[in-house]
Length: 113
Length: 114
View: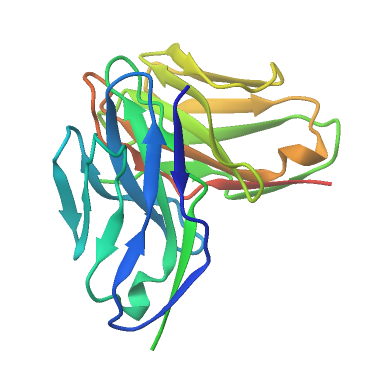
């Protein structure tokens, strides 16, 4: 079946530190890959996406590269801010016919000033 | 453009009761998906509706049902509530016509079952 495994948190960093959140996947078809972010008390927001191998998604200083050979989509940011504190979810969708998203368990990030 | 709205935002019910949650998608979006979020199981897909038809369904018991109206608004119903149904229920809307369409999530309905 289709599944996503991401590193469990919580992750606590100081402002301006480098962030990596690991994400690997298994998929029966050809997946599109996503990172979503959830701020306290809110729904999910799409942070970035990649739809084919070697694509790099980027947004707000965050980046992730679709690595088919390692089935990975790790999230990185060079310098985190306090405002980046949130829960981050890696997700996949199998292309063709349905919008169903399969999510990882989420990683809670706290950035201290 | 208004975002995805969900009503009510909070609900408290007792075991055995039933509940109906509502989701209004972004104007022009024809696909609505529902997810259950719990601390233990994370985010799990319930079902997806496109043009009033259920297009995909997750692994939930038949107590969980949904429908979509001609204006794309969707409702989900949970009958015979159990304590384990306490969760944040999120809906997401998208254009739905081709793959892949970005999904936009609402703020969720927090259901507490006592």
